[in-house]
Image (cartoon, rainbow, N blue to C red; front, side):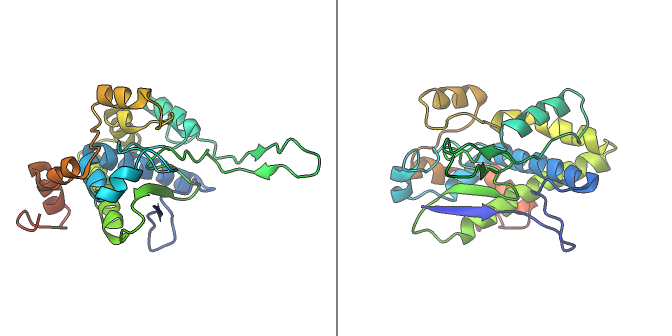
Amino acid sequence: GKHNNWSVGTDSGMNFFYPGKTDQARELFVTGIACLAYGLCQHNEVVRCCVATAGNDHRLGAQEAPPAIISLYPGTGFEAHVDAIINGGPLLGYKAEKSTADPKTRSAMPAICGVEDRNRTAPFPFCGNRFEFRAVGSSQNCSFPIAMCNTIMASGMACLSGLIEGGMSHRDAVAKMFKENRHVIFTGNGYSSEWPVEAKKRGLPNLHNTPLALATFNSDKAKKLFKDMGIFTPEEC
């Protein structure tokens, strides 16, 4: 399979998914993940649909491929920060610090690790300055999955903009989005037998084959998303 390394940036060089070294960059980082969480949660089926093929159905859930259940893995440290924001904390405060791994031998130096562990059982793990959409099929053109990532991200940004323009503070708008979409964040083992059971409790769809996934592309919900974001007309869906 392919791993679609994806991020969003501004024309002035700001990366939404890099923790940054200034308060402005750190706030953008937290805000960007709130928008992504919204998109993955509210339009979960579209993301699954964009990687639906018969061959990929066989791969998902094994062979370093994530399961068919789409969830967001921002790392355990950031997950704790999300809960702090939901409980009234500030947007700032997340410590993006790299660690080292002990090789358990004196003949090798400690290896520098990323800010968060890259969970290889997650469909959307954080990788330091980007997210990695790990569910793309090996023979698939990445353009459609990228288009869907951009679409759901734009939907999240539109939601945030609407909340702020409606009078809500930046902090409270981000907290609201995290609270309402908290259940899409999962930092456990995606290969475990417990995860499909837990995902069902959370209301996350388990579209484990292509017919189930493709049926969602023609839904009223998907048509509205594409129309609102200016991607497709209802007839084109």
